[in-house]
Length: 250
Image (cartoon, rainbow, N blue to C red):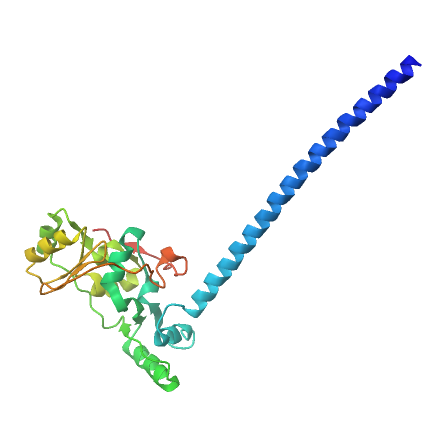
């Protein structure tokens, strides 16, 4: 009888031990299931955001009406390369300066030749889609600062680089980048911009990393900037990256 009681107790103890293991396993399973559901939820949110960004990209959100319509029709219109903001890649630390330096030129549309610009303008007129500015690669010429002037600028601690030297772009679009930014000088601060402007006899445009400007002739523009991003700079997650980029160092 004592032997049977002992065996029964052993069986009961074993059962309770297994029951505890089962309960622990259930608890672990439930926690892992909860984590998995959270992961599924996060994945769905990420997927939804990706789809939203892709939809915004396809619709060219943030571009002016005329520019948007031309870019959306680039498969049917001839010679459309893209908007300037799509064709350059800007390091984050220079975004404010480059955005300020470019201004509305970020939305200028680069085309292969003048006739392609004429066709796009006719397209806008015919459909009453608004206006756009076009930069034909066949005629746009690079602008640059002379080697002597550049050497003088590099001797000042406030000099960061010319605008075109701080961005990345395809070799094909070099003339565009250098036309728009080749003679724009980026500086660390406004005082440095004033000093360099005097050194260059106020011939060029100086833009600080914070977006303040010393214009040719000496006028100054500055103040607080609204928090915004260019519609197609790569860092905002919407822009396209050039298929091939070349980085021109200062």
